[in-house]
Image 1: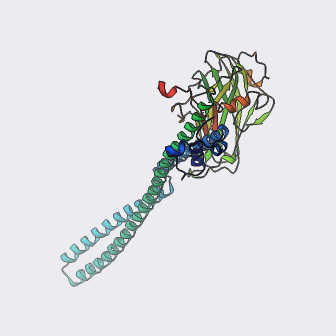
Image 2 (image 1 turned 90 degrees about the horizontal axis):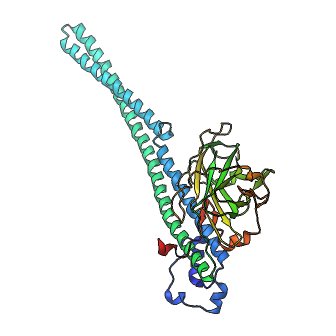
Image 3 (image 1 turned 90 degrees about the vertical axis):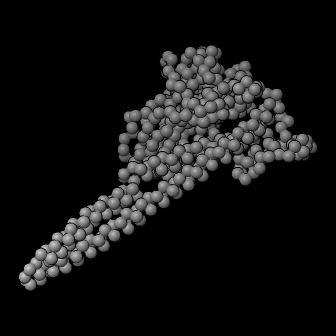
Amino acid sequence: MQIRRILATAVVAAVTAPAAMLSVSPAFADTKSANQTQNKPSVAELEQAVKGAQKAYDDAVVAEKALVQALTDTQVPTYPLLAAFNAAQKTADEAEGKKSAADKAVTEAKAKLAAAVSDEDKSAAQQALTGAEAAAKAAADAKSTADQNVAAANKALSDARVEISKKIYKAQNAITDTRAKKEAAEKALADAKKETGGEDCVPAGGLTAAAVGLPSKIPAGASVDFTLRLANSTGRTLDQVFPIAYPHATDKSGTKTVDHLLHLQWSNGTGWHDFNGEHHAGAVKALKTGAGTDVKLRLTIDASAPAQGTGVVFINADYTNNDGSCGGVPDSGMYPFQITAAGSKPSTVPAKPEPATSTQGSKSPAPVAANGSTGGTGGTEGAGSTNGSLAKTGSSSAMPQLALAGGAAVVLGGGAVYLVRRRKAADNA
């Protein structure tokens, strides 16, 4: 692993300190003192840098999406500031009608006064005119006040939209910034792995992972069960497949992360288990080509979770084989849902996958069929199962290989990303 120390260190620093510079002077880059070699980041450290960069990028994407939704919400009639503006406008319209009626009464009173002949008629007409003019002034004052209220309500609504727009602009800049840091971190990691002479993991387009049955609306305080469905059409048996899932959520504003209020578990038929540090739902053994299997998942949202919060579950999978090859689903599936008020019922409408950005593209996995029995989720480690079997633990003897290979596909913060690519992928693109 002969990666140049200064460049690699700069990438790590850029993930932890946004102000870090990623540029490296060629003179310094070629320096290979013993001290530099000793202090250069390891592959594991670079993988952590990629993990942090990916999480920052995923969080920026989710935050920008939530802010765009918040701006869209300002067009909904029930939005408080828009409702206040509409109410003020209605009052102003009514005041305009009353003012018009009062002005008409003044005109009519003046006409009667002009037509009066006797002193008695003139006196009565003058008194009527005086009352009409007073009423007209009061109506005019009310109209003026109503117009001022409309202007104030309109300003408050416009200011709110401008503030959200400013946040969207910052969020879009954050996406650009974090994407650049993520790509730099990924390049540093790829360069390090290339220099070690190790074999890169290859994304397998024939391996798919999808969420089935996740509701599009989930109440705070509720638990919902759904399925992570795997299908293998790679043309070979995959010795170990690691299903990956990760939940992420923010409050209605999209600015506050509430991941700690979401709890995701998986089951192999012998109870519910927490995900491990790599967000793996156990390990499916010997998933044959043309076969599929289901993994049961349960998402629980704390009762204190904010109503109208925005959530998403990222779905992915990676694999390792006994011959040392490894890989994963090239693109993460992103399944959004809305957190509704506690006590309401989960939606019967399933969450629809949306494209999730990864180093391989911006596609969500195509729907996959179970392709046979789904009993693999309740099996043991039997490698002879046609559809694969889910191990009872979340770890395996292949985990060191997976770690050395960059995990093939690792859930990083808000989603999964394929970390390493075929060495000549760039040349062949």
